[in-house]
Amino acid sequence: MGQQLSAFDAQFLNFETATNLAHIAGLTILDPSGAPGGAVTRESLVTLLRGRLHLAPPLTRRLVEVPLGLDHPYWVEERDVDFDYHVRALALPSPGNDHQLAEQVARLHGQRLDRRRPLWELYLIHGLSGGRVALYTKVHHAAIDGVTGAEVLAALMDFDPKPCPAPPPDVPAYDGSSPYDDEDAPEGDAPDAVEMLIRGVARVLDNPLALLRFVAEAMPRLDEVPVIAQIPGAGLVSRLVRGIGAERLPGLPRIAVPRTPFSGRISQHRRFAFGQLSLDEVKRVKNAFGVTVNDVVMAICAAALRRWLAKRDELPQVPLVVGIPFSTREMPVNGSNGVNGPAANKVTLTMTTIPTDVAGPEERLRSVSDSMRLVKERLAAAPATWILEFSAAMPAALNALAARSAFRLASRRAPAMNLMISNVPGPQSPLYVCGARVLAQYPMSVITDVSGGINITVFSYDGGLDFGIVVDRDMVPDVWDLIDYLRDALAELGALASLVGGD
Image (tube, rainbow, N blue to C red):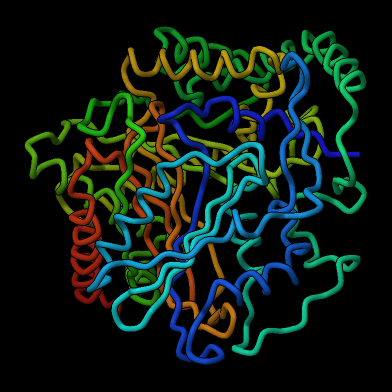
């Protein structure tokens, strides 16, 4: 029987519109010189996928909708994946530089995935300067989060130039990394229409209890919930409930979300820029100032955004507000955990400020460190699983309407946040695809009306920090400036680290 989507995973389907797209992607840069014949071909990729598709379950599943939308959809196995559709090849015109590559993948990133098929596409891109080739791979967020996305890619890669034989389909690809336990793995078809309707009605009848659970658990945390946090009085209610309740949570600072050039409704069109920074240099700064790698990443992002806004005379006097995804894989959960079954997305969202209003680089870094410490203390005291409970509390038939209504509310009021920043850990040894060495793995994520027209995602790989910045095409036409500003910000902190003994 097919596996039903969790309530949270279904939210990524529900909020999707022509402009708010819900897939995540990766841009893999390859050196094909070590591949057979010195080339990576579409045929070699298809052969690799055929032999390993069972190691990446999200690539073999397609959606089946429940009649009348009474319940969340089901995943069913696609028994004959159409590689002619899912795997494509194209070439850049000469000279094939990074800006041309970014423009091409930005166009691909602005196109919705076909829900009648498994929700992924892979593009082999030839014609890059220096003899390189690239892979652009996108998968719907309903099927994977950042961590499982990295695991799916890893299932198609090797730690040696010579591809290793894949384990047979009845042997798990890796222990514990799949979002599904063995007993929950989807098999066969979804329930028939009558059974899906019966289940859907039962879920609707059970929802009042889920709603009561959510209200009881969410009241102390209303100031964490995007959109709701901006409603007048929400923060006051949250603080009062925390004050009288048994749960003692570290308080969040009152957050005012300023308007920026990347606030408001986004278009369907994207721009993309990418770049790599030295992980060793980031660690040197970290050690010199006694902070974390993530603190340094957040601080250089704050510096880059400050410079970009100041250049346009648009720098707010208050700090920007950033949404930060946190993995919930190791977190304890309460109640139903907001899911109907195993979740592909095991992540929650918290918000904090980044000190774009602070001029000094060391002061920015210290401010970031303090803010992130407060976030971690709050998560440790009570993991912020509100987003899971909220998803489960509402009847499935109303979820899509509620999601889109929230987006409309956010676009009319002050923004819920200014942007998203995410930092995903990756392997620190070289990987290979079809014998070609992976030079970099640049992540690409989601921008929305609610989260703002900039998303900065970072993936650590083989001694580097690979930055991928996705923006709305009209809001941020000069996205490559941000990559230059990130490099300059790290160099500035590196010079300060030398002065305090970081060498």
